[in-house]
Length: 305
Image (tube, rainbow, N blue to C red):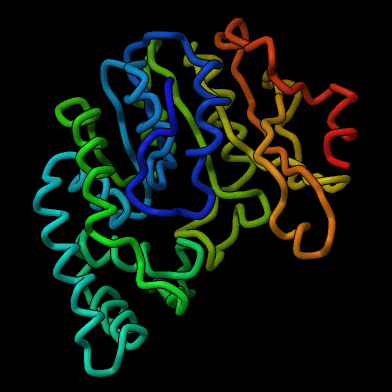
């Protein structure tokens, strides 16, 4: 895959930068790529750009996110036109651009969850980070330092994504276990679930959490059905490991992908590399790249200094 894959908007937790390290664990060509926790579907977009699969399944429990992706892929001109209207309003809004953000957020929480409104909230909110309150309403604040991605910048990315995926993508918004049941041999499932720190709880950083035991059971069922999959699941920074490892009984290979220097550590005057864990099912372990960063490699600690 030459170059970084396009993206619609900055999205916290996106695996876009890690995609070149993740795709080598997939076959060069396969039937379908399924993302049950799609977010902004960075791996789907990267795989489509590389021509890896014949079809793509994009699912996320957060329906407005799926609507943004579906609009970008199926009706890009309409999405750009609608987004341009919402984005441009902030410059003439009587209360200013910050108050305009809160107006759009109120409209969104009041029921107008159009793809353009969702996209504007993502483009303008702090760190591109989705946040929901206990009442299920979007409650993230605006980034006061910027006005969000301009339509001029957005358009070529959306057009490229539509080119790669239009006519080859299915969309849904349902529980990940339902999506996994639809997988069949020949497919590859890529999972990027909520971090373990928020699993099994309702957390403001995610639309919903997942139960660890239920997730392990779902993975075990994929194994028994002969479905190949990859899972991004926590990792480490410096000496600190985030989350509990998936059980050895699942027979998964764990590698650590270099996600770059931790911005939080840099603020504290440290230089620590963040590694994100990738778990690989039995059927995909043959595709291990030579340059893969193994969990057992002793040079990890040296690189983090």
